[in-house]
Image (tube, rainbow, N blue to C red; front, side, top):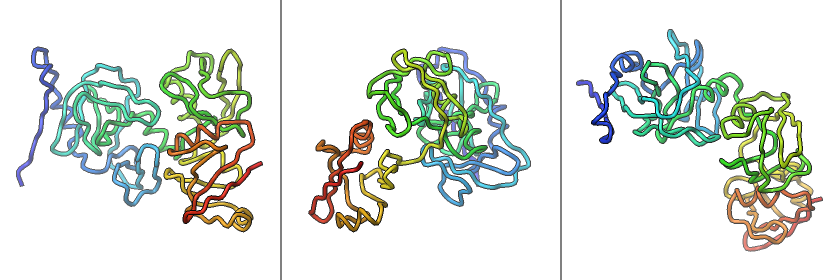
Length: 299
């Protein structure tokens, strides 16, 4: 079978000196669907035979014996020449956009799924997801620990609080801003470094509206809401997946019921639910099941 080789060069680069990525292609062209990251572990974005799976990024860790494995360079800079490389394919461009929490970083060209993202010195800086790439430090953390850190607060790119767990941190409000993390001016990159990529039990110091907080890292849970303090679990579709037997018996509600309101406010998305539950007030939820609405006060 004849090998195919793709080299895509963005049009606007035609007037500039173009780096030679052939040594990098030679180094990483053995990559097909598994990316070796340790002697006994590989990662892929094909959700099959996972020893460990991350629903936040889609990383699937597989136990796999590797004769050689990739070491990541973890300090790439925006604008650097970079390439997405795997067996018979290479896309060359620039490191165009940094990752934000679990949103993948971007090249100026396609990032092939299950490819190695490399700089012009053939240093691996991440792994391709198909719609971007996960940087090496994130990959290394998940492969080693299998979880992400959490302090009960979610923020946007400007470090404004978009939701929080009122059972874990006291005295904050929605839309307040985290200004410092461990004594440094807060940025998404530092939030990832000191919180998401931290380990359970470690302490992180943050400043919100000039108030200082010391918070211990806990494990970040997918589809988590403060309702779990009442033993109620909800999925992304706002459907109850589990709840205490007592509530089932009192309100005749079963798993599958859908949350439609919190404290009388209509809820349509999972993000709206988390925001509505970011309160220190008592919460009342309204559930819809088979055309019947049940209102449950939670105290």
